[in-house]
Image (cartoon, rainbow over all chains, first blue to last red; front, side, top):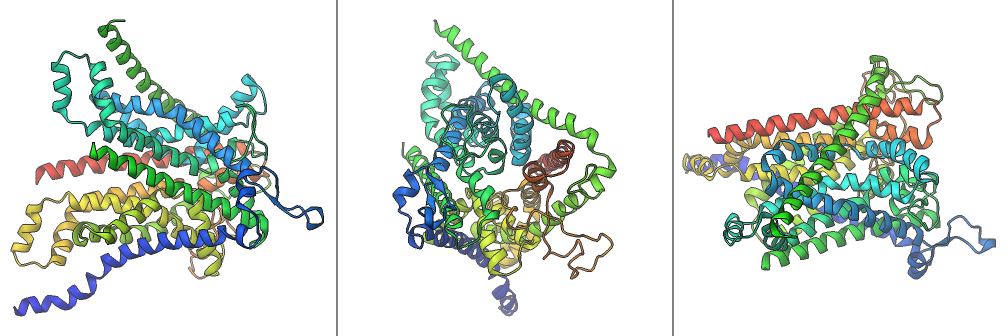
Length: 299
Length: 294
């Protein structure tokens, strides 16, 4: 009993630390949401820009003087640019990544473990500016010389992003495919199906929620990536009419202009609104992937 | 098409995809190293960078990358391990746990540019520090905490229950068990988390543009007085990492040899990343052997 008492003072203060660490985590997350929201809403509250104009107009003249009608803050071009490059990147990366996940778990586990998984891990570790630099010095040049245009294009952005999100999708999808029970696979094979039939009609439908979660996480990464895209997409305030046209995204717009605008001006406020939009979309991605994952468990 | 043919075709397609992944990696790393390795001379790695003339190096950027890494790890590791201890040893299922999990997920999916803007608002402007390594380190900590917490929590949870029971049965308190039994056994896992974090911190750029800054200032590498504004060790001075440097010379560079500097910096960064990757693999293998040995 005496010994027990002896430990008490020490226990009292040091066991306080872990919950404090967890608390810091929660509080900073809340602070991020509150601060970005507070700055991001200024466009609508202080500058009285209507949300309709911000989301649906592509007229972007943030420094137009009051005599000429005041600043025009339509962010549609940025939003479309982000959606377009992200969508294309996912279209390119998702099939490749899902097939790679099946390859690692079902087709050749030995080769998967020894070559493909390390390769995917290295791809995941390469910094995004390095992807941007290779995109700039290889993909942009290739497009300019072989396909025409300036090279800086939606296509270049989508290609760079596609390579960047393959590791994200592969690693989550691999876990999903691996979680499928061995007995069910054996049952399918015992009924006479080929390996392809087993994968296509038994494993694939069952792990589909996990695969979708993986794809959404990849999509979130592509949507939030800033510098790699900024380096290859051209950053012009124009809505692209072809894959070889230049455009701008939410992230590249913020990256370019944040340093040159004065805090509190309508232009600066609009950039914060774009940041808030990014934050909300990344939260939406989490919610969607959670819902899908939960539904997967219920089934 | 009969079933056998379909099966063969599918298998062929799966091998083709795997081949594409390997090819992309080989081309990418091959290209970076082929272009950059010849640039990596000692003068380049340790020399001063130039802002107008050709022939500059990346010495200050190399230093800043690792210094910022040390600063951010000093925050990320204790905070991350602390939160992981709470999650694996203390937290009970319920609202609070849900809240912590949601926060971690939110941080994990936070676009790094948004984290950087939060840093600009709070760590640069509100604190009055201006662009500084501390602000950069704090933002890197935000971005890396989720990974650190998850990896450490997994490592703690992987400690066999029998070890906990043995320790408690010997009369140790809960905290003594955590400190003297769980943490030492989970250490390789925690170190792995630290190295993963470090790799990500080295490559991050978007979050640093408006926090640590994009300039190196007038550094004096003979001045090791931590409070002097010209000392490389002063955490309240602005700094530019290698990753930021690649972006900076490409978007705003006025030097004539952008190509050479970017190639060299990219190769140096990728080499460091490969090194960290190898370290993680080696540690993980050691960890597995140790767990099988227990």
